[in-house]
Structure formats: C-alpha cells, structure tokens
Image (cartoon, rainbow, N blue to C red; front, side, top):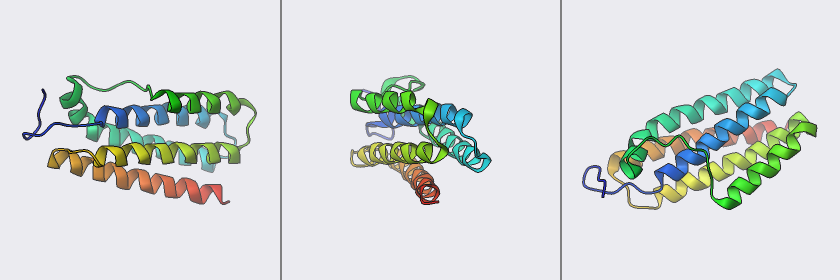
Length: 147
C-alpha cells in the first residue's frame, strides 16, 4: 500500500485521465474552429489542465506507482467523447463551445468525487487548486456559450 503522509491517495488517476482526455479533446477541437477567440479560449483550457495534471502527478505516482499519462475514461465518459468527436467535422464554433462545456462539467464531477474521498492534506490542497482552476474554466466556457 502506497502512503503519503500516512494516508492513502484515492481517485487521483481518474481525475488526471479525465483532464488528459480534455486536453486531447480541446486540441482536436482547436484545429477545427474558425474564430480565433475560441481557439485562444481552448488554448487556455489546455494550459490550465496541463498545470493541474502536473500538480496532481505526485499523487498519481503514489496511488499507482507511476505517472498517469493515460486518457482513458470510464466507459460512459469514453462513449460521450467518441460521440462528440464524430460530430466535430460538421459543427459550428458555438456547438464546439456547448459540447466542451459538458467536458468541463465532467472534469468538475471527477475532482469533486476525489475530494469526497479521504486524502492526505497536501493532496486535498492540490485537488482544491485544481477545482478552482476548473471552475474558472467552466465559467469561461459558460460565458462563451451565451455569446
């Protein structure tokens, strides 16, 4: 059993996998949008996720013994991403924003799930920072969707 400050880390690899999937998804979407402002928004989302992933990596290493570089999801989330990816070729920029806001919601759900589990104090702090970052990203996507 891996421990960190005498306490086991829980659900961190799942959070990182969701964030990695979000990074992949935003990168694909970014190539297809026409509006430079939306492209810049997607880049901010990518950057925010990368920072959060790196902040959480030490806990993923603690949880499973190595870095979490995967982007696999639970079956339900994977199905949702696959469905969204197949629709991208014909969607407008506003549709990308709407679909990606749903990705933000999934990310928040995973972080909150991890926060509901027992975590070492430093891991809780890293999750809290990730939550604040992702809440900010979600709010920005919501504002963009209303335009």
